[in-house]
Length: 166
Image 1 (cartoon, one colour):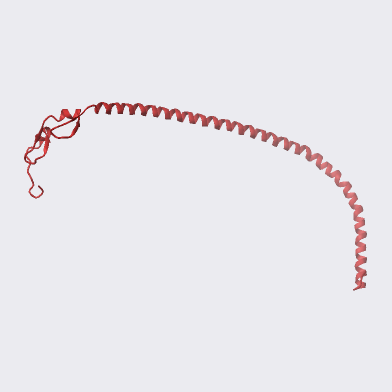
Image 2 (cartoon, rainbow, N blue to C red):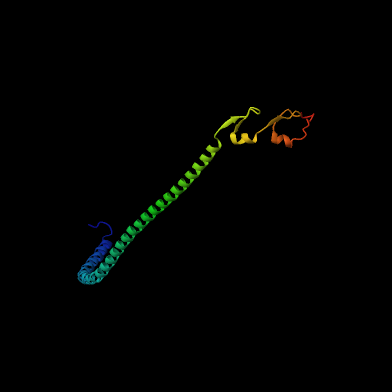
């Protein structure tokens, strides 16, 4: 029902009716298009399907190749890691063994040096026996009042006392 602008409304209805007729005609054309497009689509699908299959097959082969390469790479990395670790451990063992031998030699040498400790009664100091042979005679320098080893006494010919420093 049109209440306002009836004349214009009639024109609109007439125009829309014409459009409906046109749509009906286009629907007929549409059926033709629908009939034509599946045939074209079939051609496209028929052409694209083998291409797609080739692409899929190629990609699948590539994926397999990548998987194989990844596995190979993993094996190589694992092997190299093991070799590196074993080599490092072997080198470390060699170093530890060498150092242990050196340490044993040092300990043995030091133990041999520090065999007997005697007390030099003249100086009251504890001296290793190898030093005891060097400390033969101990004399007292009367000028300074200090205890001097005999070897030092020969070097200390004249000793004076500084009055200012004592």
